[in-house]
Image (cartoon, rainbow, N blue to C red; front, side):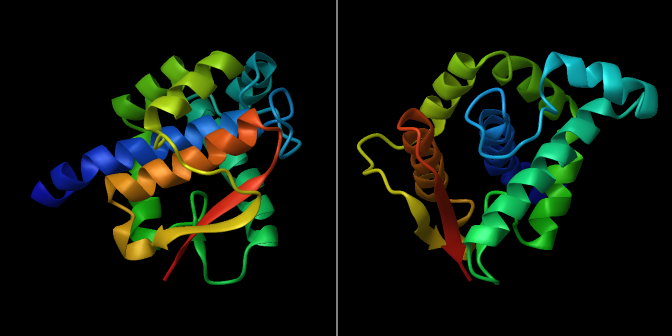
Length: 171
């Protein structure tokens, strides 16, 4: 019990970042991947099939689209926002199904502007922008505020400059 309580703040930040970047990467916002899971119309499609888990289906649909793009651009064995160690992935899966996940989805995924503002709150200020693959730290520092802020700052910079970046962590 204590372990999850200690991890929770960074897991919430990771999940929020995943949702924000996932939303911003969709075709209606910045078109990094061709999905539309977070568009209002997707609920009409998903709810009959996934009546109790449509929010989870949205999350995993975007997660897979983003994971494929990042995996294609980064070397095998590197970690990124959409491919993390298995234990972290399991914790994030549990968090997205909790009230925390529901709250995050309802707050930040209203509009492109709201998502960019939320991402700005997570980002480090004064970070230089980069395009393409960018190392932002070591996977052992995933729970570090500085590492999380660096990841958020890289994506924020890319989305606001109409560029693509792939921040990653080394093992």
